[in-house]
Length: 147
Length: 137
Image (tube, rainbow over all chains, first blue to last red; front, side):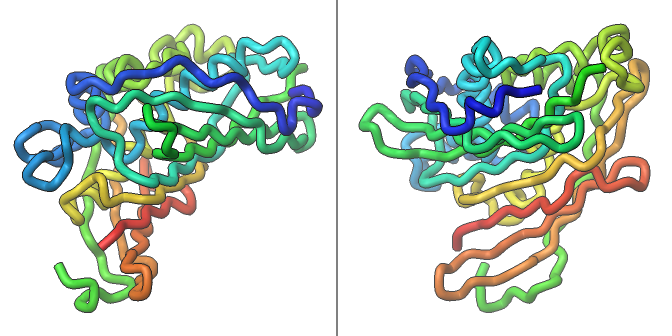
């Protein structure tokens, strides 16, 4: 069971992540994107962006880094091998583009138990180098109960 | 494209994605999610799964492309959420096919946004629930 006392816990800001063009292309290819602004710098600039635009779910790369800090937290007591992704949402203030330096702050929004299972919801707020909010990622993990 | 020309219920497009083990390894590397349930049969079985399954986030990321292809600009997807309702099992030697279809779910003329409702079907089962992408006009 996930420790219910971690509800409301805020984890320290992650180190800055520099969004690279090749990472955006690699991610875009992995999610079957054919949108030119994810792949071609000229197309992105013609569309009004400063550089390559990351696909809508790219913020998961940043969320993943935050999640590692929680999964490594003995207080939270989450068995990663029993984790199933329940739901996911991204709310974008603006698109993530190549050259962004992103940090994130994760807060445990809720911990609920559902029979033998636990459901834990995280909010990851992603900020740029000017400390402006770029995106919020909201993720619920289901931790299946042990025997 | 003019927002006034759109109608709720209108289909905006459909794509069929073939997920192979290669797709899962590529997505693992791209996303940083190296949970071995997405590439090792022995590990998947040891934690009680029927086999290796696709990252839910791969299905979510691919499904978004139907909305992106329609709007033509991935940066105009401003809110996107899904529930993961069923796993997509990916055999070692063949592909799992996920058919994604998008329809207009709501039109907000005041805020100039359109909600796209996405369905994602694998082997006749819906693998995403309440998959909704809001795009900005």
